[in-house]
Length: 559
Figure (cartoon, rainbow, N blue to C red):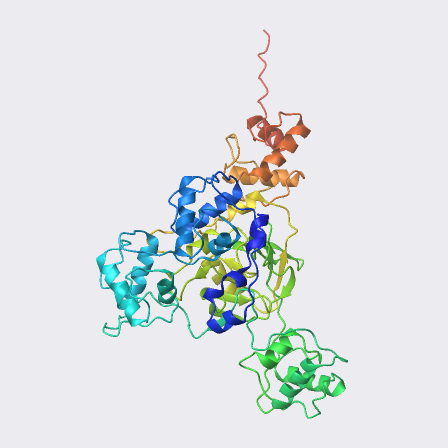
């Protein structure tokens, strides 16, 4: 994994994906020293390379972790199509290109999901009349050729990388001679005017917030605030760059007029209302009423170690301890990490987001701070069927440039329920919890339509009581066992101080270790499997309290 940390120098190697003007201004960063992977290499790093080759369609096999002839051929083909030196060896340059590769060249005779997506895009633009079968034959070749001619590309009939980039960019020219298709009734993509232009790990406001301004502050930021307050009619003093009594009074007047807490301090909320809000109220308009304070309903924790986002609700004591939702996620990579710390949400959100640095999209964008946000897995264009399979399969591992990627349903829940004032804690300090990771595992993708096979519906938690009878008859519980009896086992072990993980009803390493500890304390064989003897010892007090007493025998009187 250390090699992956050093190699994610995206801006250096993705110059071809940037606009030309930006590419010309970006200095080329040399590829770091790298332990090459070649024929005969083994290990996790090889398996990761194989998975990337599989996702891109160059390798038709499972990721075995063994670099042999098939992997070598796939690497050679990839290097050839991406203009690299064809060596069959995964050096630093090849690996960085693999990590950022978008498409592979498709031609007559190719089959698969990538072909189907190209066909659907060509149909949508009016170049292909046939069905999207996933088979690249003469009709598809002709459609690709027409598309290339109409869009100023080299007419090869092959869906090469450049062709696919334009095809899925949203900037492709439709077939002028084709009839405009009638949109399907279920093709609503949300409010496409509600879209932010952002970069994954890039500020999105035109005037991003930098720091809190209080009495005594000086500099260009203070001048900017004074100028804006003057434009809105709240400040009539000199634009001096000195944050003193007159500026504080103007900020207070602005805050009061816009229904905010009036403290005279320009924090993030006040800054964004001044510069980034579309509904700011100037001095001549009717003041906005101050909203009644209500308790913030949720707190959110992003667990980087387990790649899980956790939502908690308020308990009777006003603390955030009630689990509300658990969601698999992808946080930032080690070289582009998510911002660790506590962040109070401003309420800024958008239905779709466009990442300008990478030419990709996402649904249900909810801002965390000036650099990162919650959002769905990546889409290659504003199209429900253009989901990036790679970004979906990377859920559960570090994969983003800082943002928190989620399943679409989970990103939607955050978008609809997590609002202004909610505190988001991003931490790398929580312990590894295998039970939790398995409980939030993403469902497989639907082969016919890019999306989960089904949206998993949370099942209600079993009812556990300390003195209640556990589920019976007892069965042997071991690794990968699931069910109500596993839930009871975890609750009982946690009650006794042996289990510290998440109670999920799934039996994995945390439960196994807790069972071993109990078995040791009870003088039982330490197998880590909860057999009948272990369960009887664990629930001995409950079983004894609920045992049916044997009837007293009737004595037969002596004659």
